[in-house]
Length: 358
Image 1 (cartoon, one colour):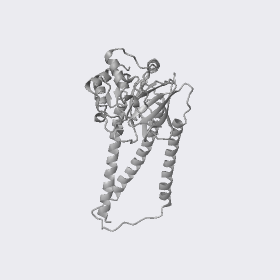
Image 2: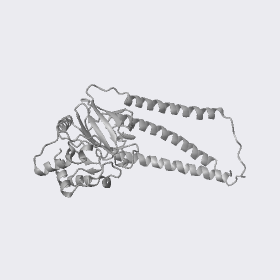
Image 3: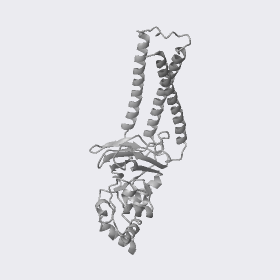
Image 4: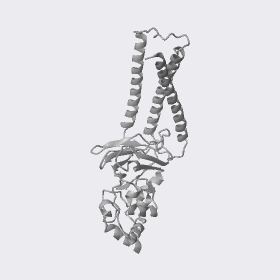
């Protein structure tokens, strides 16, 4: 390799490091901006934790970034020094400079220092993993079983005897009144991943395996998440919504969810319930208090108490509900719910019935 070619390669590497530093600075600025954003407005923001597991991961990431930044600065300074000191000069004769081999001090330094860095990173990561994974479950913990489906989430409140879908409600957990939530993660079909960045790290949801995670949100609000493991066509539309409520709000929500479906005697609603119970709806969905006891689709007992449809894809409004029943794949490609092919009258009656399920 000629001296000119070697110099051009050094310059290219130098510019690559400058670009990396620029990206790091920009990323830090954006992260600080996200940290000051309203609750729930940044669904993948790990830089604004509001739960102990997320806080542990946040501080670990800052430590790792600091170590990497320190390594980058040292390497960059050495690179700039080498480029400036050994650059090609006007009086160079083009011959290769004297080569120096066998420096025990240098070889020892670039062997021992990386080993020490790796050991430190390993130990700090192991500490965080132990803190999060081996946390003791207190007696008053809320226990919820999360089941991943293509492409929605089922939430079983085993302690309270009911099942809901797509929108997880949990109580706020303060240092003065701790009420953590421990989640058991199962899959009904393929690999999924439960991830709400501001509450906890990613946890795989795998068939024939039971995984666990926990959260203890310190602030009331809506926190958004995402299935983090590719699970099929509608993977990007398998969203997560976690509502953190005050103790009073959460207990009121629990009381409402434990009740059976409302029984509105109106003629349109009665006809809609008859249409619901006479179609394939009951094979997949459950409405407590009726003959519908399907397990393949979400529990609809309190459908209208949810803010969204299709695992967070669209707002839960009568018009969107009508569109969803008419053709789910048009809204969420890959969804396993087929179009119901109802007449206009049947569709109106069915929507009128579902609107009573609060």
